[in-house]
Image 1 (cartoon, rainbow, N blue to C red):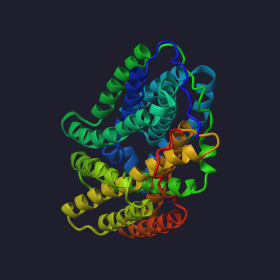
Image 2 (tube, helix red, strand yellow; image 1 turned 120 degrees about the horizontal axis):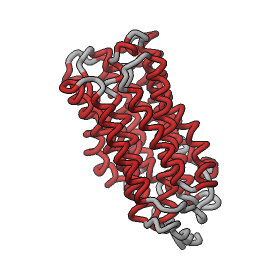
Image 3 (cartoon, rainbow, N blue to C red; image 1 turned 45 degrees about the horizontal axis):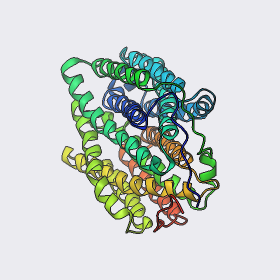
Image 4 (cartoon, rainbow, N blue to C red; image 1 turned 90 degrees about the horizontal axis):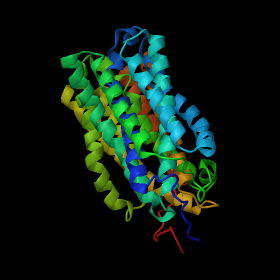
Length: 398
């Protein structure tokens, strides 16, 4: 395979600055996403609409994110990453201020959609900025570091929001989010100069999707994102607990994922991907069953922790595999790989809450979790059929 040369950094934006801005953008987006988890389902304007409407509210973020991703790519191609980074910042600030109003439902739906648009713009622009300023050989590592901040944002958001609501009121997490977005905006303005463009990595996600086995990886990513996001709109109302307890429960899931990720990562190079991903699908199904039939709070906590472990088993090998699929595509691409990862992750974020919300409204919580567990096993089994094996040799160069 021919080694690619990197594009020249644009306007003085160094790889270090690009990584800081990209990582901060991803962290901020998922922090705001996490801050909403223990708050939105318990707002009176949302509770009175029922589980299905709550699922729609949560999935609207990912639906808007997918739509914005398509436009963000065109904006980056024409104007460079700085413009969509600033558009994403404006959308995020607007969304957090709208959330602070607490309702009505239609206004919260607009806010959640605006947050999704901001996320789509920020994710594409952040990864494009890193790609445009980092050599092809080091690009995968830099993007991996940036993507790891997503989990950090998910970990910090829910427990922090629960604590703040208990002591400072419902609007406080969103006012904090607005402040964090402002600080992130300063980084985007100060550290990004010029409009660096990618010139050595032009293939998109469809090129990677056409590589045999990529669809199976997409299914694994969607399951990993959808299993946890599906719980977000329905668990708070089911438990009837306060925001602090809900935040801590989701924090337990994220903490379990943080702990499990390096453990799973250690075996990604040696264990068969089917064993890891298959175990993740089984663990996710078991977690949903545990949550659905839990009679005590500690049982719910164990179910959430198992869900976090399942997420690590699904996403850690999928992240490695999807980048290797990029090297197998023609032409080779890392940007296309991570774009496909983002789209698959967003698809899980969209489908999980939507299916869970309608399922709980139609069947009740326990039955919906049981059906969800069966669906995860069926999808996981289908995805394992063509899951590619991990390459044994480095794919970055001849």
